[in-house]
View 1: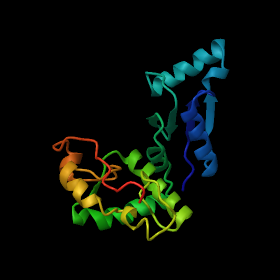
View 2: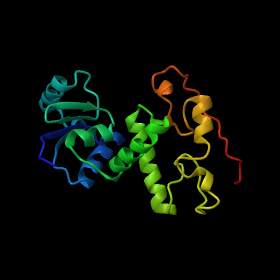
View 3: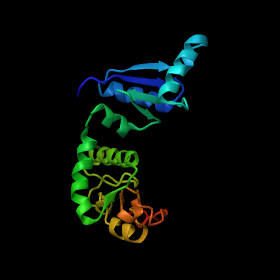
Length: 192
């Protein structure tokens, strides 16, 4: 990963701003930041003028990476702009290669996909298998066999609703807004 010029415009009370700082620190990324709410008078006005140049709405968090501006809490977009790949990126690539030929596509909301994939990896660390991140696993692989991703309900869910229960896997028509985005009901029998 090459060194990039990274600047974060943040507010100390903004949870998303603090989460981005933590992520950058955890990834060992060098960056500069300015906490707008700790500046006053001329310093604040100068910072706001600088921020307006890259983000006219002056919203927080705003991050610039070698001239590219990203606004909001967009973890995956920030990682990609910096050039960082993690275990979740490898999982995304592997699953995409396997599932797309079968007609199952990742939701076009990549940030949501990566949140769900991080949940799968958390469950793998926790239970030893990647259970659906939107369902409560028991920790017993045999008992949870039906919710190991891709779950046994995915095929019927995508066929009927265009997406699986957690909306990780969707049909092409769902991604193109041809299929309405309805809430997928839980098919799993309670107390399983």
